[in-house]
Amino acid sequence: MKSAYIRIILCFALMLSSEVSFGQLKDWAAGFRVGEPGGFMARKYSENGVNAIEVNIGTYGGLWGTDRNYQDGTFQNIGFSINALYLWHHPTLVNADLHTYYGFGPQINSRDWYPNKVSNNQADGRNRVSGMGATAIGGLEYFPIDAPNLSFFSEIGFYAEIFPNPFFMNLQGGLGVRVNF
Image 1 (tube, helix red, strand yellow):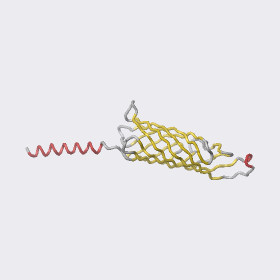
Image 2 (cartoon, helix red, strand yellow):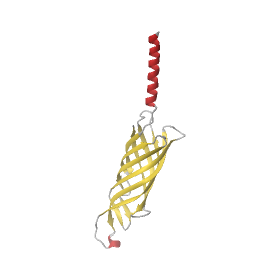
Image 3 (cartoon, one colour):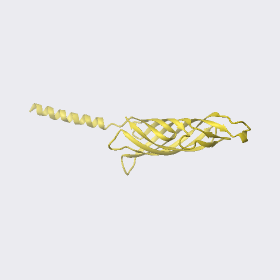
Image 4 (cartoon, one colour):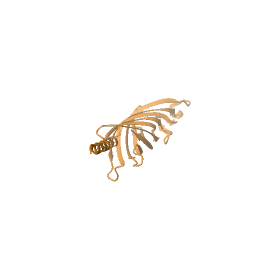
């Protein structure tokens, strides 16, 4: 009889421990995005389950806008970008596995800029231009039931430059995948 009680207590303890380990929220996510900016991202979720901080490092101007007017010249190549976003995310009413998120933050870009010869009376020359501005995004993220550590997302947003070309605007967005751990 004593061994039956020990077995019941042991089974109950194992069930409780498995519930605790599977019920934990994920703390981090890392992934890749194809789009603008495209590249690697890392996300840290807050303890409140609503907010997160995300850092993106990658290319700028690669998917659309490789040839873009800027000041008295053009961008004609792919550059480098880094941004940090403060996000809010919520499950949708339609499906708990589908989340919406939105946020904003600073962004720094570095691209090669080619001045317009006619306006500047210069020969063709390449100049490295770094810009700083604000970015805002909104997106959808899907967490498949079969792969709970993966999430797939799509997002759209914009970038508004503050320095050196105030009010230069650019559409941003992309598709990607994250691993949540």
